[in-house]
Length: 78
Image (cartoon, rainbow, N blue to C red; front, side, top):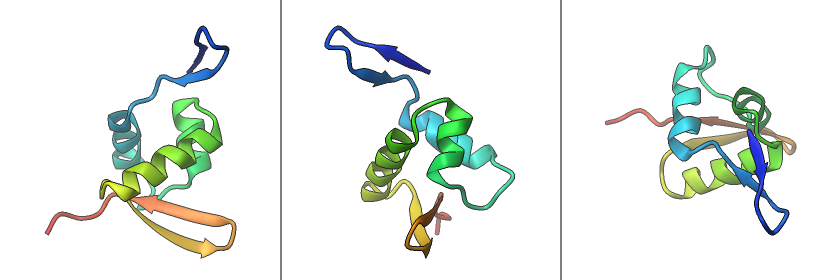
């Protein structure tokens, strides 16, 4: 869900925990940024940026299936 702030910018309503919970409950072992965006009703570029941040912090792993297709999953605990 998007809302406008006073500077007329979009602000995200989905948290990192929302993103991780959506991935955990997905019927798929890995998801795309488009899937996250559609599931959480946020913009795809925002979903991609948030997934990149989670990746940098170790919250998700990623793999490139092609130059334009990236999949994301939660790493298994060792």
